[in-house]
Length: 212
Ligand SMILES: C[S@@+](CC[C@H](N)C(=O)[O-])C[C@H]1O[C@@H](n2cnc3c(N)ncnc32)[C@H](O)[C@@H]1O
Figure (spheres, rainbow, N blue to C red):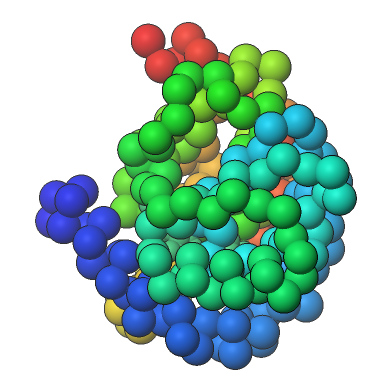
């Protein structure tokens, strides 16, 4: 499947999931709470949140932050708009695809993504776009679940993945560390957020030479 078709399919899955996303995702809220706090502790300046979803990060946004949030699924964005209204969150919400960002080079000081690169059809392309739009001295902050690096569990995740992705839109067996490296980003710190080492918090730096 080419990138255009894969993106249309992934977007349709998230538009379908939008109605019940908050209910189902509440099951894993506890697992990500510390990670979300850490993520937003490290932001500064002009901030881009990609794959903003239904706005689960809004409660963690800095009071004086200048945040632009994008998502490619309009129904997820509609939920985010409702949540922003309810919480009084200051954020500019726009439809957009992280694989082809509509921003000039070196626009943002910080890019943030939580649980996004599990579903971006071409994650390396999306991460390269973050490399492009973040300023050379900026940061790319990722809180992502990924394939567990143990032979048996990893293989079970590979086996289950086609079912999960069809149902929910997210891949459970992405090799996100490898993807971050393939995109040319420089990993500054990498922290395991759970005993299974499935969820990781990554602070990465842009590497403009990789874009050449
Ligand atoms: C699992 S949800 C996570 C939402 C939110 N970041 C959170 O922490 O709850 C993944 C989100 O990424 C969005 N997404 C996936 N691929 C995308 C892409 N190529 N461009 C923009 N958004 C994308 C989906 O529409 C969905 O809202």
